[in-house]
Each structure stands twice: as structure tokens, then as C-alpha cells.
Image (tube, rainbow, N blue to C red; front, side, top):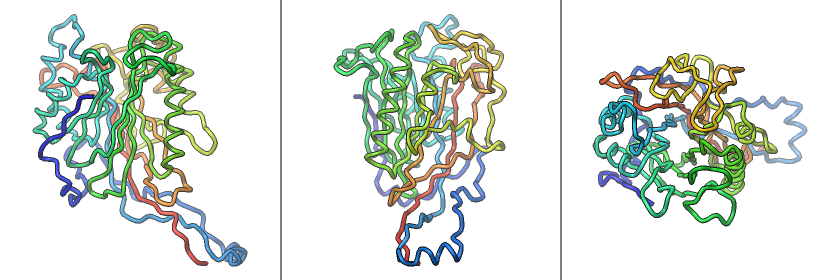
Length: 371
């Protein structure tokens, strides 16, 4: 495991206020992001008197906001046809790009520890990082986290490999060409420590068709297992899934399971919070918004165009906390945007467009009340 926590991080940061928008990227405040519940009529109240107590879900605080990115950085290990696209040429400007928006959490795919460490240093140590190499014997890519230590505090971190049970860590699973991982982190909001969320970051294989489907099933099981053990904690899944949204793996992740279902931030956000910038796919192979190819890397099929985002392979999905939890953190999507910025050099930050989702975060309680 590789990680870096800036020395400036202090638990005294819990006294800090919520993050303020520092750019004109369209962040908005929700007029009322809390869920609405039907009023109890007098007849219903009379019928409930015998029970004498009811569970009433109520807000305990004003909602905060958290911005989460899914961002394939394009690894430093790649041999670029155009040297100007190499990580060494992009890295300082990528740090400026992140600083421009100041997201709370960046789920970075194809990052190495050296890449995340450089970004942390260039961002003045404000951003800490956590990541685990997918190969144990050498430092390689991870599906790690870069997070703003002035907005969130890392409570726990974990990593598991996307492979059948018994497969040695660091080895490919099923028909995958490369070892693949999912990294997990539980964060607390420094402005309101009772607000916590679990974030998962992954990068599915570009070659293995079976591996992508099995990886989705493995992730779904992990997410549901965590939800059963900590029903008050919502979960956000980010990643480069190397899959169109018409794929089996997208269906596996988003199909309902009992009372729960993962939702797609890009498809569930209010219309005035949606901005895809008209891109056909979030992978663009350095072509930018003009990219229209129907093939991704390896076996990735991008031919389906049945929906506005069918060919997007970078997703942000979330599973909200259980409505039955005594204390819970609730997420409501405010905006979801594909960032098509170019760097000062005129180049793109990566061969993928970053995907940004901003959620209202609120603490709710199922408190007993006497009728």
C-alpha cells in the first residue's frame, strides 16, 4: 500500500465550515434537497394512537455539498505517439486543473503512487492521497484517491482484487489481460463529522469480456454487503468501466436488489444540473470533443448510441443509505458534468474527460416521536 498524508492535516479541522464555491462552473445550492414525505392525516393519526410511538425521519442539520470526480489520468507508463501528451509534460498543468475546481475527492484511475504524490506536492500538500499498486512486486497503476484534507477526513481505506476467490493478489482474474482492483475509502465531512460516505474506485479490464461482467457482480456483492453492515452510510462508485451503458455489467450494477438500487448520477441529476458538453464518449484518445470512434481499447464496444450517454465508459453511481437506518447520511445529486477543459498548453488533461458529480449531503435521523 502506498499513501501520503500531508503534515498540515489536523483533527482541529473539524471546526472548519463547509466548502465554498470558488469557480463559475455552475455549482448551485439546492433550494430544498431533503426528501419529502406525505403528511399524516388526522384519520391516520387517530389510527396510530394505540401504537403511541412512531419513527419519524427528520433532518438534523443543513445539507453540505461534496464534489466527487472520476478521472482516468492516463498513466505515466504509457508510450505516447505525441510526446506532448506524456505525463511528464502534463502533470503540472493537471495539478492546476484540479486546483481550479477543488473537488473534495478525485477517484483516479491509471495513477501510480509517484503520479499522485506529484499532484499532492504541486497542490501545496492540501490534497492527500491513498492508493495500492495492482501488482505487488512492482509499483504499478492503482485505483486510488486524491482528496482535499480541508474538506474531508479519511477514516478507513481498503483494496480488493477483481478476480475469482483463491486468485493470488496481483494476478489477472478470469480472461482479463491485467490485474484489476477496487479501492474503497470511508470519508467524513470535516465541516460536519457525523456525515460520512463510502467511496469505491475501480478500473475494469479493457480486454476481458467475462472479467468485466464478473467484476461488476463482485462489486455489487461488496456494495450490498457493506450496506447491510452499515445501512446509514451511502456509497459512491466511480471508475473507468471500459463498458458502454448498454452492457451487461452496467445492468448488473444498476438493477434493483430488494429495496436497494444503485443510481447513475448523470441520469438522475436535475436537468439544470446536467452538462455533458455534447461529448459522445468520455474516452476520447486525445481527440477531444471530436471523438466519434465506435471502438475503445481492446474489446470495448462503443457502437451503441441509443441514449445520450450510451458510449460513456466513465461512470459515477451511488447507493443511498437505508431509509430504515437510525442515523444516516443521505445524498442528493445536484449536478453532474463532463469536464472538457483544455490545459494552458492547449492539450487535454488526459485521454479521458473527467466526470464530476456534486451531491448535497445531509444527516437524517429516524427518531421516535409520541403521537
